Length: 523
Image (cartoon, rainbow, N blue to C red):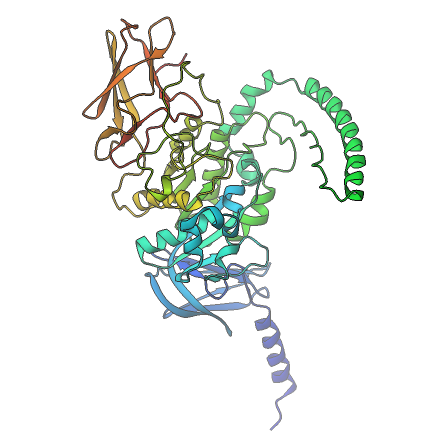
């Protein structure tokens, strides 16, 4: 018997509707779903169509709204390395694991791939040759899909995030998924949405305070002069470049155009949120364990808003967008390197600055915005933790990415997995003054305070009310350091490692983590 025309039309319509069911691009074979929390799954379909999602014995359904969007949440799942199938209607996504998912974002130190570092990082080079069945990778490219970690895929992935991921997976022994969204040379102002920035009261207050100090018209006039000079240099370069080509010589690097001038609260160039929309927005809502962030060299690019302030808007904005509460946020300290190491035989510390004697002249204070001191302040935001980099090696692009990844894992185990290990160096908790002595009490002392390298504790300077600092004598007494100088009979303030680079400062905890710069004064 032939089917009726009505039945035939129904079958054709049903087929066309089912064919329109699509998943978000973040759901592909080889993915990792986040354990121990409701798991969002979403996509598009014909308006009004019912969509069923099945996984691990669960079936959830949703109806597409008038714009065709649908979303379901699977009940919390336990970690599993068993490759299973996620079904969405008639579609099947295979090799799906359940474990922990971390997002890596920032600028070049997160963006640059494994193949760029293996020549100078033997630990990373060896790791990149391996296959890790429980490690899955998603690159930032627009058409990227989840990939298994293999000797073929590893070299193309973020060197820092891979270094973090393979070491973390070994420690926690559950599947780990890594999602990267990073672009070299980019400011933090590109990595939060316009709404996140505009709704942030602290950023607005910073702009309000800064604006009266900013002479926009004067800067625009200077920019015009700089642009004219640039055009002259560019013309000269074009002639030189053409000549070099004809002679078969290397073409010289061209002049860099001057940066634009923005008004207070606006960018100097580009648009707030442009990279968030391109690389992070597609991930928003995917169940994650936390974020690893490496950015800061390019500051914010928003006139009048400093890095610490804007990171508050960025971190809080991401968390609100995800709707998962205050998930762990780990960030790499800037600038990279600058201090000595506790144990140079450890691979992660092998490229640290060599210990040096105290300089004859006490260094000036560090950069107000781009210094170890400034970046430590980002930890004031809830569940936000710094991966100390001062003892890991110098450079804009430090070559030992495996060391940076290992340090980030050390932090993650403590703050995201409650392993109980120490993850920060000694931090000043309080101080007291008595005559010519200042007693400094510390937190994050771990197994106890220690000094390493040289024959004494050093790196402290002390001053009286005259604000003239001299190098101080310092001794460890329990969880305190007592600082004094025969030249300062009535002490008023003490500073430690008060410089962007401080390889001559040698206070650590016995866990091998260095103390960071601090001061007790506000001079």
